[in-house]
Amino acid sequence: MHLRDLRLHFLAAMGLSCHGKEPAHAEGRAEIVVAPVDAGPLAPPPADPPRCGPDQSPLELRADAPCPPEARYPSEGKGLCAPLSQRPALRLVSKSETECVYHACIDLAPAPPPQGIDGPGPDCCVPMPDRPSSSPAGAQRQCPAGLSGRLAFKGAEHGKCCYRSREPERHYRGRPVRVGGEARLAAPASREDWAAAAGASARPGDAVTWLDAASMEHASIASFAQLSLALMAHAAPPDLLRDCHLAAIDEIEHARQSYGLASARAGRRLGPGPLDVPPLDASMSALVRDTIRDGCVGETLAAIEASEGAAQLDDDGDARAVLSQIARDELGHASLAWRIVAWAVSTGHADVAPALRAARAELDRSVAAREGTPAGVAEARVIREVVAPCLDALISARLAA
Image (cartoon, rainbow, N blue to C red):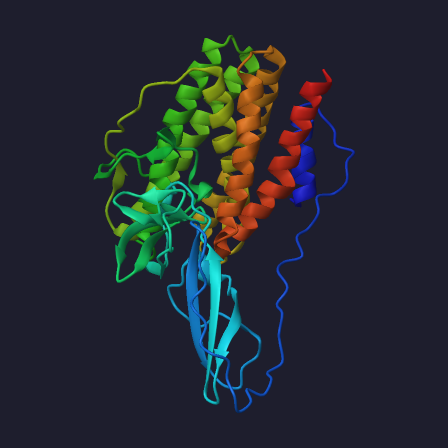
């Protein structure tokens, strides 16, 4: 399904239509290439490093002559932090017949420590800012606590601030139950009753991937159970309650199939251990917030990623069938989420409008965080071209009512 069709599908689920312009496509950052110039026999006196602001880091680069007036940070470095991975431009401040010296102040974009899962990249470091940042980390008063929405502070060493990569949660694994924004999962256990028939015979492959997916699908059952209770706390109509329970049944089957595929690859039967279910927050603001984050965003991404995953599994019929079914079900769950948010708007509850505004701001932050990683670029586009326009249309409809 194309993104435009997906957007129209969700608008129809809410009883809305969209007559606005198509979302603008970002053109991407242009690369400026400056031709080298002759260094000449004389060199200006060495310049002092720039005095950077509290949310900036001084950066120096030395290169062999000849010296263009501007240089890009090298792209071949491994383990670069996000501010450096964008290849910042540096200004020539000193040159000789053999060496060029460049300086720059790079924006560190301090942010709260990001939530998510450990990223695939190694730890990375940036030069320590000259002055305390606006979001310092612990006793290291000059290091931001987080960078670019996906790098969490690890420690300071040798005049540098070091970070570990944190990726946004991948949503194809289901809608998790959460505590403080973090997914809560049941630990895997050896048991006979959860693995579906796909786990009956051993098959080589990645058991860990499917076991992680199964744990997320299993946690989604609890998430829908809590959703149904929150809906009842606000006197939701019977069709939403029915579809919420049907979605939970879908998640049970997703978990069984995923545990089955994990078992087939591990060579032993696996299932979930006990799940420490958190207390229910049945407030209307939490209902709107969680439904947009985990339903409108999370399950939309789940449907797309499962569909793409199925298309890539030409040699694994069992896994392809499971992912195809998950894709269809998650699309239905995402539609249900939009119907729930539209119903919440119709109640006129005082907490709905602030929750919608907060959710809309969170979408922008989520896009910025995802665009910092290759895997997140496609997800950011879905949020920008599907989720955000649908939420904007819903907010506009509420204001017009």
